[in-house]
Length: 150
Image 1 (cartoon, one colour):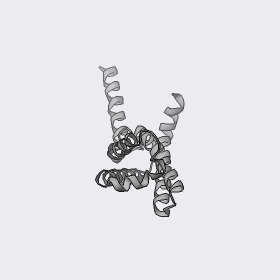
Image 2: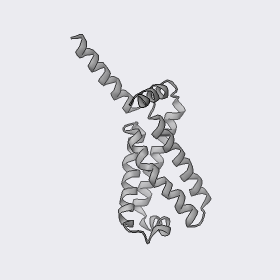
Image 3: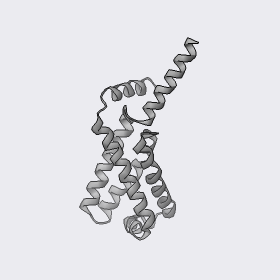
């Protein structure tokens, strides 16, 4: 737990606005992809074609859509950032594999790799200063300080 605390302190001290913009852009991208898969299941079936013989492919489809949609909203606001990123990482590894195994679509492969790299970054570093996680942490620290003073 000490490692995570020092990691959070370092990440907050080295947080820049462009990193927050990348987090927000990642969240928007995930929402758009979730809506795209939701509204066009044929496209999702084409993406899942290399894995169609695996058991539970419909469960995977529901997991991907809901994780993209909900995780995207959480990433935009910076709420549960590490959890949201953790749920995206296996999906994005699957997206990279789907592009490599099912014929390389260079644009989708680069998008999947960039999204995977950003998700790993936010899983490791957390949301940064300008996020709901940071704001709620500040509120809980203030509440604890007020209880001690009174």
